[in-house]
Image 1 (cartoon, rainbow, N blue to C red):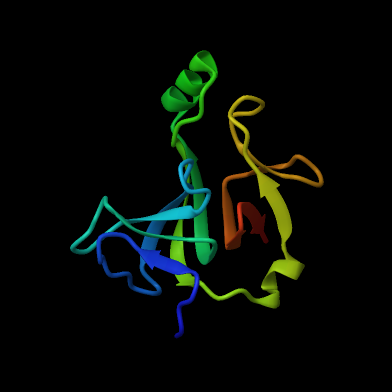
Image 2 (cartoon, rainbow, N blue to C red):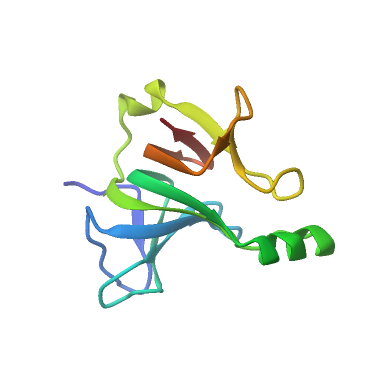
Length: 134
């Protein structure tokens, strides 16, 4: 598979179909991938503008979220954890619904169109700062 939107961090390798913890990087406006297993477990392995994940759970550290609200500043505390499927844009995004998370308004991820909470999805597309779920 050709990977065009992925930038490795410190020459660390990634494995398609492995599980990663993904978050929006507040410094470079990309998405960062943390390895969940292997040689680089717990470390950032790279950054991308476009990521496709499957079998995704959403998790939020409530303690860190409350700190962000109290200090009125953003910090990394919300993640999508799923199996990496690739970095190439596809038409799949057209069949998904946009989701959002704002720690200053809610304590969970929600669908934009109906505000229903989201804790799991079969498919997730992260595309240039936006997220889309099944």
